Image 1: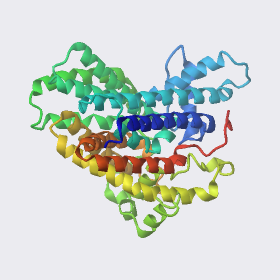
Image 2 (image 1 turned 60 degrees about the vertical axis):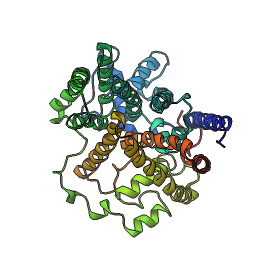
Image 3 (image 1 turned 90 degrees about the horizontal axis):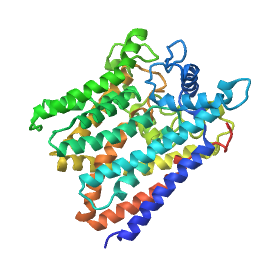
Image 4 (image 1 turned 180 degrees about the vertical axis):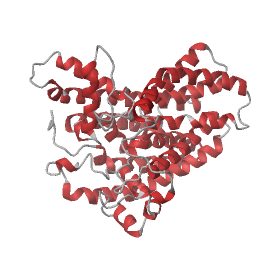
Length: 453
């Protein structure tokens, strides 16, 4: 007997409600000023807001070390800054409006995240030819990713990538079913989404190479229609977003500038310990997975940051060590989270592989698989090209798009399991539910309410 449809709907509702609670709780207990390189992101917002609404002017490396980021993720807080300074009375508008636009950014990004999940559920409904949009398989897996809630709570471009990527997947599936026979409005919409991804964060560009790679495969039957769809869409995307990268090249000498000097690519830029975890790394991963214990080790750091909070930005941000709660016990708790997450990780990856093999006739599935590979390789190349001794650039947030793509594809097989072996499906759902409850503290800020408001 199924987790009975009524019970399944109840679990879906409970997880949805709990995610809403998480977003609201973190709104009151977390300020974006605690986030990664937060001061530099705030400076970016303040710089833009100085010139709005008269003009749009972007900062250089002299103004903020986050100058290389596309501007889309900063416009909402910058506009909020403009409105705020025209309402309040203050001797320092930039300073006093920061809590206001930080809160508005959190609200906006939380709403974007909810819409992102909804669009993915809609795409999966169509792909699975399901009667209901309530896909518990997808919802419970994506909700287990602790990195989601940190990313949403900071002023960053990654939530925008997730939002536009969800629309991108929806459009790819729709166009695939039309055999790439598209109308002008479809091409225009695709171009807008491509531009949105490009203007969100440079990581978004890793979503585009798979479309070029697939052109040279035998799986696309009508390559003329394929080119007629993607070439004009890409051109529109470039016309709408290329200005930023051209400007970046003119000012910084590179289309993909960063706030560090790039080393000539060589695997020897990173020590052996970066690639292969030592026994000490593995011990700390399941004992005290908090910085600096993993010390620039790629696999263990990414794992600990995906499921827990390795860098401590929800628990013990370095500038606020005295006020973060649960300081003495948090390392032990994250250790338990990591141990449990071995099962979660292996199960999701297994479903991912099976789902790809069973559905690789689908263009959407092949695209997702290539996008995962390109995102992973691109991120590794970045880490090798910009080596940092303490591994500070190894953050799950930076490559969050890859984790969402993996879960999306894995959920196809997970949902199929419901009709193939209902007992196993029910067992795994309940196991994930227990894990979700155990891991719940990783989704929440550990800072006092309204501390920075």
